[in-house]
Image (cartoon, rainbow, N blue to C red; front, side, top):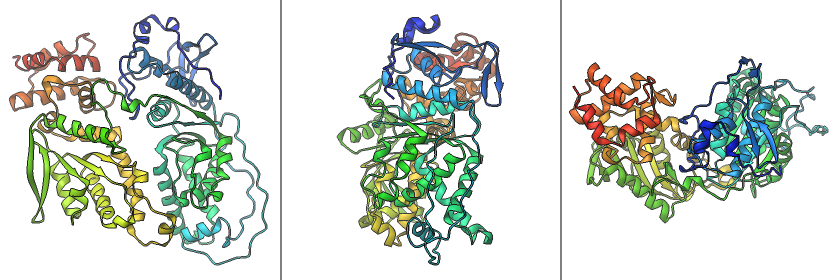
Length: 592
């Protein structure tokens, strides 16, 4: 694990990549998905052919890279390292030796797993023992509705699981903003394997518990099954769907998760699953100080056995770097300090463009709902948490907010406990309503979604409050509402007036160009085809002339200006060059 720091020698790069390799002029945007990158990975050439397991080459053509003169290695063709180097050479990301160590490890893992086949079977299983009231059985007894006490079975010796050849995964941990998600997503997206899954770990655990519950309730044939049988069934189902599991934000906060971890992963690992995970803490600190932590501890050595553990240790939080003041693409902003408050205000003011309406109202079932501030140029509103959750509002009110505004700002979401049960219930309903209406939520909160609602294990065991059980869904939705796909879908659903009304077209920022690109690159291909270009021109014409009738003559005139290299498609650079000169936009829109 003591990898040398990586420094790429510019002289080793192809001539076309050398000019920009050391520029590093644009900061890494590492908090979002990498799949929508403007520089899609290349298709292998030099006689490469596609095999069932990935890219096999008849004539080797890997990119050779030297690390500080210490050693040379070959990047996997079309893989994450090759793509990372393209981004770096184009100036899309800065040089970061710590990241380069990680991306090399991920590339090595990619080369390993393309030739790996999971066993999909377990070793001979010992005879099932009756569940008891002691040990782990008490949890599953409670989880599945209880079972009658039975004599304690004879304890059977456990055989330590070891990874098969090619099965060793990777566990990357480090502070926030170090690029963990960015790198893992690049690894996932560039890996030519079908049976793979990328998911937030909290969402995955919700899915596990949901599947377990359905297995127990689904058939009378399951009545005699043990908890271990249900776990094995769920693991089998999951392995059929994907054997390469990429977990983002690997953390354990609930005892219900902690107790089941070793059981579910022992089956997955025995059947051949490969795990890649990112986390803010090392395995030894997972579920630290959690209730009944000794029940969780056996999972830690198992995780260490099946994953190489690597600490990133980056000094730079890339989420806090921007090319211009205030440019930060987060929509869920935490913690809620002075800088974060200013950032939220900056985002709102930028959309409003100096035109803010105060004292507006919307109506829901005859009731008036006050809107403290909203934009005049687009349906965007500003509330505080207290405005929406300290008052006696319900689902109908929140749905009315989602109907009236495509983007809702909420400031100052506090840490929540059962002492604020009414506010918790309203916030859950609010998130459900905005999610249902596919509304963009931009907010500041004291803590991340998982930690925002803090419930003790005693409260969790004894309370009948629905809020505790509904919170998992709220976390899942808050996570999804930050995703690239969710935000892109919203931008593509708006009409031209609402969408373009969010931007000052005469002085667009780099962040604006990236946001607008998501609307028009509808297939996420990294370029605009002619249909997507026409959609852009229709929006601009509607903004300027009030109609969308782009004639063939006008389209050809605009295409001649925008597609500067005449290759029949519009790159992001051509898109940006055209829109940043508003005089050109106006003149082409006036062409006959």
